[in-house]
Length: 98
Length: 394
Image (cartoon, rainbow over all chains, first blue to last red; front, side, top):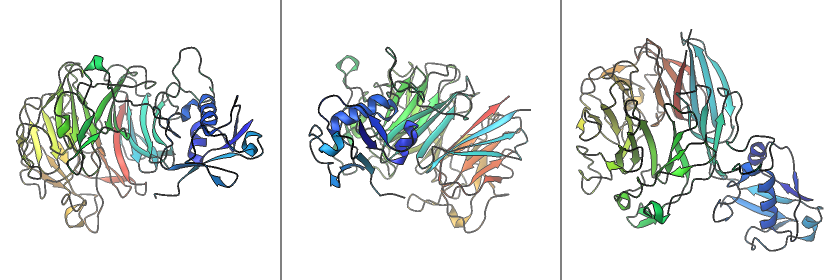
């Protein structure tokens, strides 16, 4: 299972508390993890990435194992620690606004 | 006795204020969707327990929320809580999807409008400013969005389709954003003619459809806007709000950027009725529920100074459809008040003694249970109020 940490507002939308876990078949990448998250929590479609272009929303970033993965290709394999479930993929909202 | 339910959208959540017909004692629930911008919340005239909310965020985009029990519980249409897989054919997670229509079949609507710098710019969806439920069907709702376009759902908000005849009718390249963005903020459904719809856009102007939203025409004749190259242009006017008495739907009132206007012919021509207002800049305009010529505005100092003149919060009421205005101050702060009243933040109830309500960017929601003669705050300290709508429930 892949562990994913969502921002608080998205946890509220998805009616979950804490981390979520999703099953990913095949290569574990940001793309495949987000596909799995949106399949399990369809109310999040459009909130992390654009409905059509699938581009990451500008004020969200992806981190794992202390690295910023936001600008890596979406289909690039995530670190083995994420694929094995040892570390979560962090979806983080920018600290901005008021 | 009737119940009055006031739906308040704020910068940090939605609130539901409820009272009986006396409108003296209020129950406050919320914040619903805490931390999110609530641009608008409105109930269905056909089913008062059916509510729709536009919930938006610069981080997470657009969410549509719906309640079927008068605001006690909420869900995203088509995606009820607890259901994590899509059953056969049921669209899921589509209620947040507002896609501009670019199909050849419907006329390949325009793909650019005028930007702040005068260049052409592609349409980009940002948020829903206004939700207008059908007068007769709880599942049918119109949505006015930024960048300006009109969408419609007929399945209770699960899916939305653009009524692209508006954006594609020809004047789109001359529309441009106002300071708040290029938003379609007003939708009026004619109570006597189901095919007739009025909408308004900042900064494009007012438009009317006589065929249920398929085709549109600008209705801005008589508007004069000195801040645009041709002050009497067909489009380009920064219309802030239009209002319509239910009993006389051909009679329209408009608060333009500057100027308060009136039309006696469903928008075909407009005449200025600012009269003795101390300033004719403002955002809101509303009509008494039973007197089609009694109207309300809140004058704001100027487009550069978005607060009341002299720190005095005053509602102005005209009983003559404009031109002659009375200042209404009883119960409103008359010194050191520097709030704004945004375009969707005034509404009326339909009780015999018409109630008038408005919200401020300082977080107050005021109620007048006597048609504007006197005012009292229902709440003092909400986040900045974006919208106020009222339901009168028998």
